[in-house]
Image 1 (cartoon, rainbow, N blue to C red):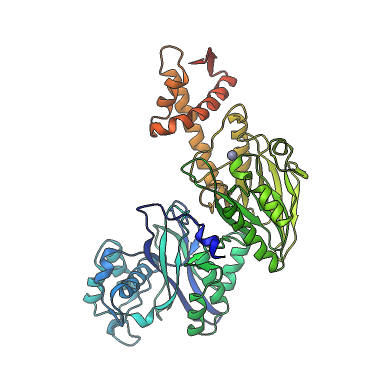
Image 2 (image 1 turned 30 degrees about the horizontal axis):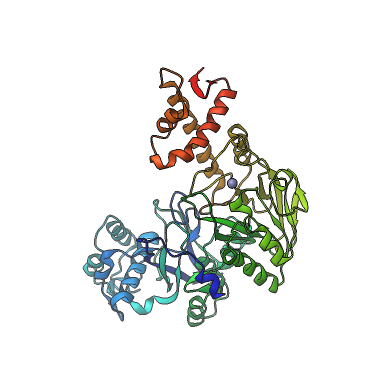
Length: 511
Ligand SMILES: [Zn+2]
């Protein structure tokens, strides 16, 4: 297992993970233990639309907050935890006469006022001091450390704390970085994770699993601090919703992407999607995961290819052979790959996966980027595995004659009208709200098409690609232009087909 971790790419230079604290805040109610969780705003670059516990990165001023029973970095991380919890939920876990149950209490309104001051930039240390309040390290039980894996664009070195909610205070979320927040029983939260309606990063999934079996603070702290499938504080398993494992593997793909996400779908019967890594050590990570799942009673059925491009199929032979699996793909993909395809996938068919949580993955033939491109859409959870229809980190290239912009846009539109939940791209982070992402994507494509048309119109004489591309892509660096040229050709072909642009001798003019 350690080779798998050693094989992870190092963090990009100059971008070390940022120190952060997170708080698993809990309370006892007549219904049992509840935790306060938050839905993050979709626009956030890290885990947008995911559910999480309160927390955030260390602020320089967190150093200045005295913490009884701790010093140095330990104190700072507690101060961050307390401040973030206060800012995000309004819960102030501090001690002092004015927070005692029968003292001259700070009423909720006053606490709200302090929260606003801190959110507006007032020093947390001064606000506490002004009201005779003090943080106590013993109120914040260390409950695990998690590093964001290196392939994600924003990384945190997060310390988790288990904190019992102070009595008599009301937790609430104010608009901003958070869409909503609520007290929830861990079992109910896990049901939402199973249904695919609440995506969870590994630390939060682990925390909910532990809190679901809560017996005592000491036992919870021990379990929280020893998560499974972790090495060097990095989780080897990314199961943002139940039955959808994301396995980012380094591939020779189009920059800025460096990885192709392979997927392992299912809760007993499994499908492996897009084992793209030609590098054996990388491909082995996927094999290792599947073997671990098989040891736990799962049964892999097949390797599915979304399309024929090398960064999606580079490890297919190796993975299929190592696990003794057949390869399934669309006929148009089968015709373009070396690996023998034993089952041809057709638009509309359902790949049913039996298991504790059965899944029904409908095959959607979505050409445009590649002729045999397929997406998989789970009719139960509404998750969509979309291959190269959408990238959340790079640009999808439509490269004629293999690529066809008109067809691609039609297929994007077809995806957009699905009741899509989470969107799982082959490149880049997972998107919690797929429909909104597709809308944004289609809007961007329409905007770019308009820029290409405008560029053609701006020339008095028929213009060549070398003139159109720099003008149509004047918003990006010139190093993108060689790649953008292929998309420009695809857009121009569409405009020509629509009689909006005329072409002769490789030169374009407006119709
Ligand atoms: Zn591709």
